[in-house]
Image (cartoon, rainbow, N blue to C red):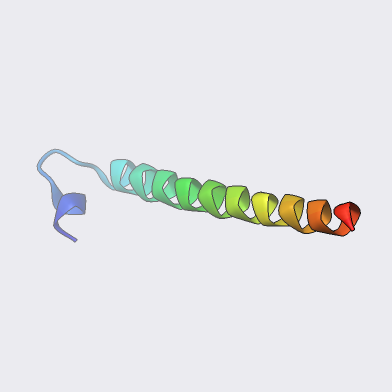
Length: 47
């Protein structure tokens, strides 16, 4: 809410901030998924 309506912030600034937040979330999810897949294959190959 309030942070997007800061003084001097243009709509483009708000969009860029939102996109950066989304990108960070996607990268975090992708990192967790990759780690899970790695562990999954590691367990399969180990046995």
